[in-house]
Image (cartoon, rainbow, N blue to C red; front, side, top):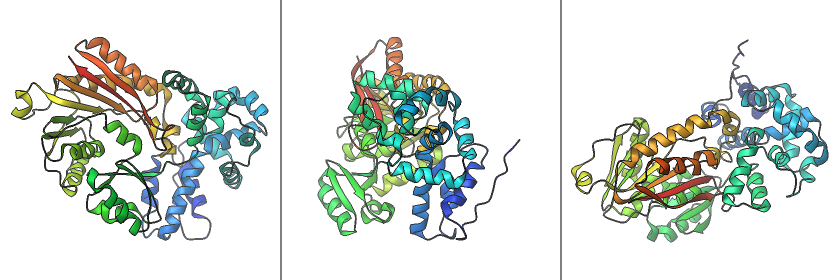
Length: 430
């Protein structure tokens, strides 16, 4: 039976988060939370700017802590020992996104938000009794990782040699949103950008070219963003993008550019010397990329649509040297590395669909490899910590492309640095 979609009325008669929570669970399937909330929390919705921001964070928190709330409510666990005993049953019952959402719908709304508050404060006995040596499945449940990804996390820990402390830190971080990071477009401007931001009322921590920024005012209203002096880019994305060691005068192709976060990073390194091509299947994203390039005053960025199949027609300057110095494939993926920022994505992610993503990633990497010149580099990146999408794809690619050799690979960001989690591999064409 189809579920009826309700209209959320934010008229102040009851807490806005409760109204929106009911509307969210009335959807036939869990939508993309940022887009869904963006449509309902626009100016004019009946809430002021601060109330809209507070409501958004409350809903995100309710989703982020939702797996544990469901476990506590349906399993009745009051201690780590009880939770450990009942974890296999929970994992079997709530192994899919649909089952988790149906479980949320079954919990009384007031009880659900009371649990979220208790869990968020770390006050529940299950959380209080957890220790770093506890069973991994229990930690996954307690820290809002869907149970079906337990084996995947165990494998990532083994491949990346994460000890128990690193695994616990990784899991604990899933309960919190990462901070806002900016990247200074021109390194020499870093101190001045930080000074300007502080004058505008933001708190700023400087980490090389990256700035960790906090404040009540939206960053899009700041002078440094509007003038193109800095870009919003997570620290893990910045670390991943830095694998493209671009030098002025080189020719580079960002093959899956999206709206251009890494394109802007590479353009800054080129300093308007050389050529930078950016491609994506979505022409709307390429239009956004061109706007960003103009705002940052990068004149050597060229956009070309690409569907991931036959290579685009590049200029003679590229074909004359036999291809690009660097080709970046920031491939579509599960986005598991952004679950801290987008808590609904972990619930919507289907573990059974990873193999299909892997095939697409391998196909994109193989197609883009044809644009690398001899002696050039191919960089593969994902915003995923799943080995299936990372090291496994690289291994499969190398097995069928003996003209490439590995240079380096690994994960960036969380749990080592407070941000998202990205993977990057650098391959050299012989």
